Every structure is written in structure tokens, then in C-alpha cells.
Length: 336
Ligand code: KG4
Ligand code: ZN
Image 1 (cartoon, protein in one colour):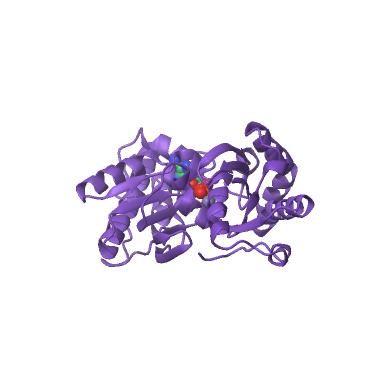
Image 2 (tube, rainbow, N blue to C red):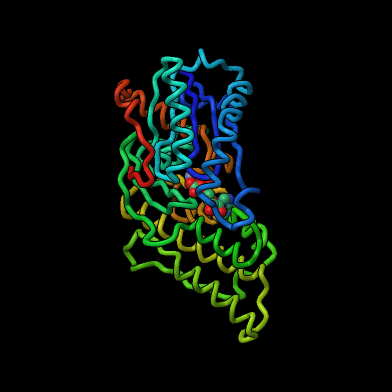
């Protein structure tokens, strides 16, 4: 079974060829970091235009690298949401056109399901498991009981964790996307130089909140400017901020496992590429007798291989009719 995956929900144009649900024959990602970097965040109008310019080339490269022809593709899997509508439409319309012209089946994929199942690109994790999807747009905890069987346990009430990395990076003029820059800067800093607040929202809550933390970083930076606090370096701020995010994420994921009586954890999404987070979750898992799984960093950030993977399993359960395919539309918000 050969699946061509297409992903364009935010600022990465990606196409992948996947064999039998887990063998990644190619996974081409074209990021738009230089375009959006100047603005410190994604500019939707520009993102859509960039996708249009690169999608054909990205798909061609994915096919060439995998030594696959369009004829050999058995299924096209494409992201339909959630995300930026003007971005999603580029991938979706390309996928629809290909499916129509080649008379191939197509399956719609929820971007979040792609993140949830990215781990299957590496290994088969036994169900049920607890999954933390932590990205630029989402910070959600799920109970995963099977393919297509997801229960939301908690979510962010304001900003996503990745968004807060991006904003703090912008405040410190480090670069975009912020996560990798903060991670590097934090390696040089002392996380104990300043203790930033951790919003746990009650002992039992599995929800998240990062807006207070973000404001606290902004306050420290402006107080420093006014000379109201002893010198604190950018590296210390990055380290203190990252430590607070990691503390919250780790505590909630352990709490979710306890509440659901599940001992397997999957941490996924762009922020899960963070080495310090991976180390902390791994340590905490050991301490609590849990087994944790992380997709490789290249499968954590947005990529089409995870979309092909989710599409592969979804199509086995319920393929789409020609009419459903024709009527597919992009969805800015879409729950699992
Ligand atoms: O999953 P993703 O590629 O796109 C969305 O679906 O949002 O996640 C992107 C987010 C960005 O906010 C980026 O700053 C963050 O993931 N990120 C990281 C790291 N790499 C990417 N955050 C922390 N540490 C990293 N190493
Ligand atoms: Zn994503």
C-alpha cells in the first residue's frame, strides 16, 4: 500500500511517500522560515503564496526520492484542518486535482491525528496510551485507545506551548521559529536565576495555560531595561522560561497517566523536538514506572509522513466516496 501524503496547514509545505503505513520512502519538507522570520511569526497571506510556489516541486521531489511514480500511488492523504485556511487549501486542492486526474482514492486527515500517530512511523505502540501533542497551535492531552479512537483529557486555555516559545524568542530577538533558538540559548543559562510562574490550574486539572508565563517574561525584560532588577542574561531568561514550560508539561502528562491508569506516554508535535523536554519526561517516566515514546524530531515538527500514516489507517476503517472527496473543504478549526 503506497500512500502519498500532503501537508500544508501552516508554514511547512511537505509531501511524503509511505509504504504499508510505516516505511517512509521519502518525506520532503520545505519550510518558510526565511519568509516569516522577518516578522517573528507566520503571516497567513504569505504562507498561502509560498505553498502555491512550492507544492508541485515538493511533491515531485517526494516521488523522485522514493523512486515512485504517481501511477504506483494507491491513496492520497491530505490535511484538511485545523490550520490556516489559505494554506490548507493549497495542499487540499492539489490533492483533489491529483485524485481526480489519476482516478485515485483520497482520504482527509486531521493534522492533530497526524501528530498523534507520528510515532507509528518508528514503532508500533500498544494501545491505550496517553499522548501529549505540543506544537505551535496546540497543547492537548489525549487518551488514545486505537486508530480513530481519541478522547481529549485536557487542552490549553490560552496560548499553545510552542506559541509561547515563539513569542519569548521574539521578545529576546533570537529568531523564528523560537523553539530551537530558545533551546540553544537555554543551554548557556541558569534556570534558577529567576523562577517564572507555573500555572497548574488546580491539582487535578489536565488543562494548560501559558499566557501568564509569557507576560511574566515580558515584565522581567522590561524591568531589566529600566534597571529595576539585578542583571539577568538572555540565556538565564531562556533557561528559566523553558524550565517552567517543561515542569508544567511533565507534571500534567504524569498526572494524566495516573488518572487514566495508563503506563505508556507519547510526546509529539513541534515542541517535542526539544531535547530538555525529552530528557525530563524520560526521567520522570522512569521514576513513575512509565514507558515513554518520542517520534524523532523530524517526525515531531510538521511533516507529510505523519499525515500519510494517519491517512493509511483512517482509509482502512472508512474510505471516502467520490462525492465526499469532491465536497471536501479546508477547516480552520477541527476537533479530533
Ligand atoms: O508541530 P509544529 O511543527 O507546527 C504546528 O503544528 O504548530 O510545531 C511548531 C512549533 C513552533 O512553535 C516551534 O517554536 C516549536 O514547535 N518547536 C520547538 C522546538 N522545535 C520546534 N519548541 C521547543 N523546542 C524545540 N526544539
Ligand atoms: Zn503541527
